[in-house]
Image (cartoon, rainbow, N blue to C red; front, side, top):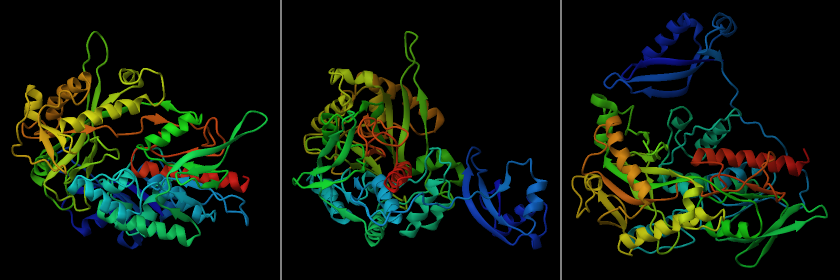
Length: 548
């Protein structure tokens, strides 16, 4: 097969137009086109009212060799790449100690799945509950203000990505096409086949629930084991005569010990007590940058019109998204803070995402349909480890957690100490006055919001940076700084505040057999990149056990 890329057609083109465009582009007749599969479909919306669809197509033709020779200098006519997944090892007949995977979010899910598919029968531990029980517990916070600290948006089967937009695109380098393996497994588990070719695939929470259950069943059918409500409270570590540390297993909260020489840490970014345990046990960690800010909500129709103009609402386009960035001017010759949109959820809702009592954390969520009235996204400011000292000046790699907790606890107070989130209209925020109520835009956050001033919800430098960025975003996307848009605080879990450093073998720098992975370890950001990292770590574990 050959791959034809960058084939552009009008948004409303008919089916015959695609075939005609292929024949014209390759200069062949209809008899020479024996098959065509869409490899990717995106759109170019830079010219509102003249939006173009952009295709990458895999072409079956008996003239493949001739065409590849004729178009040898054309980057848009190339052999179709092999994106199929190839297992790196096969489990030996006898494994003395089965590998452990800690965490069952996207990273742990795919680490466990790949190990199971290679015959290694992993044991997967998750501190939370199975996904349907977890969903009920999560709704308890949203509807009844009742928090379950071990079963919520952050903890439980499927990880934080289960209660999100289910976005499946990433900007990671992926030369081995691991992302294709992720998407293929999701389709097997019940995702729509379109995720294999649309440029910005997403699934949505309701579909993710059943998909995660189906993938769990696959792992179990292959000999893997998943244990819920099993929090890991300690590591078993030996030190050899040369002073090198080796993992030998884990201790659970129940006191049970599990023996293992290969342990995957797929914690997610909110397992703060586990980070503290790892630090206490001497596992090498370091503080890393992350971002803090607010959620912003607009009517989805405003975003659609700003992005798509008169073609807003076209079924091929769906609900519009956006990606914005503003680099602050700074002062005294210093570069200003960067502010950017993050985790944009078209036609979605803002949700309560705290796993800890007495704190408020926001996140965004959409269903597959993306048909709620509001669009929401995080508007966040990048911060560095040097910013953490105001909250913990000990030099600890966990200082970023102190910053997060301080902001989340203060947001709880600003919201009324009942899990309401503090909120403010954009017009009032820019004018520096408190809000008394909402206007045209109704906040979607559950269990509710408390209007007032957000000036104290973030450090002064973050408030100033967001105030500077919102008018700049208005210039990029008309309507963004509309006075009635809603800001809801606080967004603090954009990524992990720590990195658990690993070497080229993907093992901890100072604890052999321990494999930090995914978002919590600082190596991913989002469902797809976390799942890809889970695959890479599973391969490293498999090669180690198999002796390769």
